Length: 184
Image 1 (cartoon, rainbow, N blue to C red):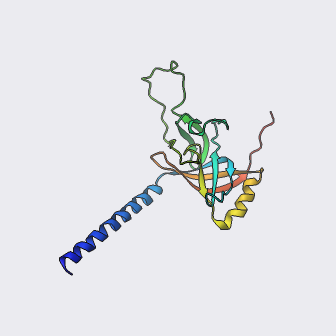
Image 2 (tube, helix red, strand yellow):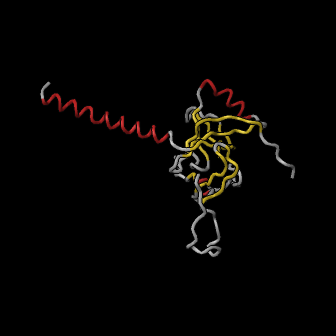
Image 3 (tube, rainbow, N blue to C red):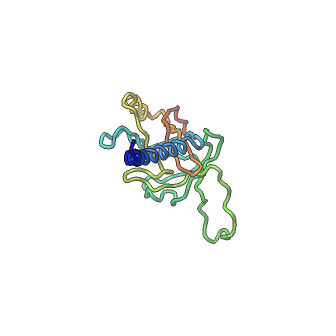
């Protein structure tokens, strides 16, 4: 092989090696973290204009959200602290906690939150990372999932992976009987 041929081969192999390295790194990152089961509400069944996805809002236990609030500011751009023993989420709270400006001195340290989901800027038409998400639905499961989503007796549960950097990745959707709400 001539020197020019070797140089051309190396120039072609370099971008491929870079792409392979990026793929390996992103695959490694996607496998890091802790899996949690989070109840969801406000399902948006498959939208044919956006592909085979279901959009949802997280129903964080312990955090009340107002449906008409600005989706970008539902938690003030803060993260969500997850409590429980993974994958069972027992409680969630806004982090850092909203406090009155004069209530605490500014030099007090924030409470610790070992499992923090960070708010992320959403893509157009999608909820923020801590407000909700979307999940791909295989065509073969679409009819079954649509029926389950429409059933008021079932509660949707999304399995998410919380990476150490706070990024939430939806992994799968399951259903369980909806808990009975106490009469008011």
